[in-house]
Image (cartoon, one colour):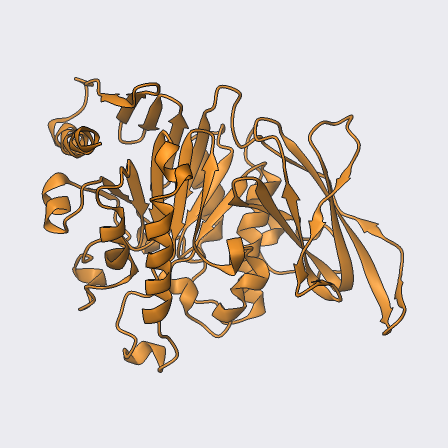
Length: 417
């Protein structure tokens, strides 16, 4: 992939008078499933065609259905691509058929309109390597998204939006500008999105409308998928303050929801997919600890803390969080304080967001898990599931100490298995 394409005029919402004003956005929501969403200027039936070679015949993606009805007669169009080859690029073309009239026994359409064809990069290379850019806590600062990702490489094929990308959406325009637009810009640059809900996306008058724009596995904000040798779990950690806090006006109650999610997670970490994966990576917006002072509230049982016991002793290789607006690692001493046995990387963001940093690059290959920004590398012989580590004498003592802390935890994990 070449230079990333800028947002241009898409940083402001525009009248959607035809297909293609806001290009489709592509999300990875299951091991074999991509969700493709696009907007139309009026009531329509949307169709997505796809293929994996420029000379192949176009195939029709499965339309979104609810209770036996194809979702139509609105402006949000969604289809699902299943059974794709993850080592080949995917070509996508949206088509809209505007609806002139919707009768009980006859629906009439005006002429079909084709959107621009979009080429999505293969999620995985032929040697099994996947390269993810991870970004969190953008808080509506869209002009910083693409330059920040570019700083960690032009060879990304996936982008994990690890929560608080959209800051308390109050309107449909907010959802288009700060949620749909960044995902469409990523897809325009050939990147697939994997989206995690943050606590700020739980706020605002339009928060309950997010599923219209954000496809979700099994209509949930959490799930798991396998990509190559990696099992990837993405969790919804809910809010960061008690439900009776004045900010929520009595309109949240995550207790039962988080317990239901925890029960799902307990089953996931016992599944064959988890057990047989070479690498196990968990994304959760709020880290599994009490946050620093600027984000500190008397919440010891937020989603992350509820989920942590479900993950201990289950071979987690790495957890990646955000929320704190300050990039850091959870070292071994802190991990012990919270009864954790896996390393946690916490991303930066918020008002301190800078173009040249704060996104993370994560490479996963059959024998290697690599965070080049931290020069942290864990290797494993795939056939025997053994861990070895190599030293980099050029690193500063401070960074080297952090890496050693993480390696000690990883090696202890391996010895238990």
